[in-house]
Image (cartoon, rainbow, N blue to C red):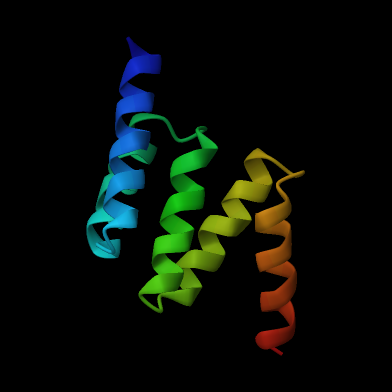
Length: 88
């Protein structure tokens, strides 16, 4: 049941993101995170959507959360690393 819900929400967010509706993707991902705050995929998709709408601080916060949940996540490591040079 929970796995099906995650899969459904994940696919829904993916479709929304492909359609360029980043605000809707952020809302959908946020709802998914509320259901399971340890599931990494919605953080990744929400961070990517935040970047698309120039909410870079929010994106960075999500990338940092991703690293808390999955320290080996290459995308999040790269984004946090790059941002550390931009913020200086």
